[in-house]
View 1 (tube, rainbow, N blue to C red):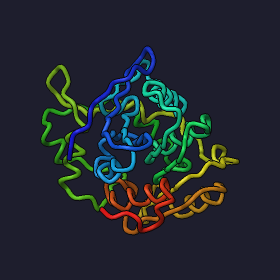
View 2: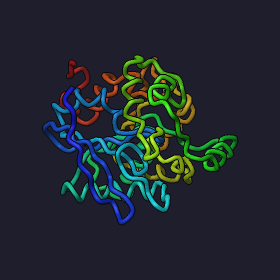
View 3: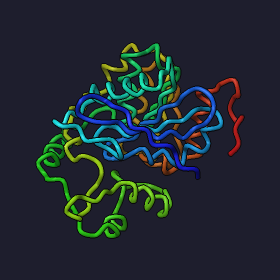
Length: 281
């Protein structure tokens, strides 16, 4: 697979935003990843999209190759500002927007605040609301120091997804892991994402989707524990122009578990004139 061009965009005075430009033809499509992840989560999906879109994958602040925010400002609002910086940098009048997990919540917030800018919105397997019993877990993570390790290869071998359920092949997970680590000045290794990003307010989605009428695709992995069927059904009930698709056998990390199915549903939703079954990969 061809490597993308790396572009660094000034967000504000605290950080730069990294965007991977995968090329392609058609309207711009911006892809967002989830919490603790990075833009390479979309790598298996991208090849099927560049024939129809100019594809860009963004590293959220504090993730991947984007800078950490100092002081640590991590919120849906902050991430949304960064998307607007990216849009202005490229001069897009409008674009398509897709996000997985946290990236879906950021995409939804942006689309609600900039409805005229988003041609099509695609939301992949996201957490609708933090369960009360998990709130303390986020606080405990915030109190922990950023972990460091002496052995890079050991980090990669021990890498696993959160949540851990997946059917992705090990070689894909190894590639994801290799793009998740960085070497520190003292020679030790750490994860690229800022541990402090976990400690952010994560409001329930219900107020944001109330009255939201833009066309939206909601993809859920059949075996997802992050977006259980009850939350998925409730989200679709609240979106008058929402289209729901459940991907058989997939867990939360749908871009890794079922990349071709994800790409097919994104294309069919974004290019409806081609109709269902109009794509072959």
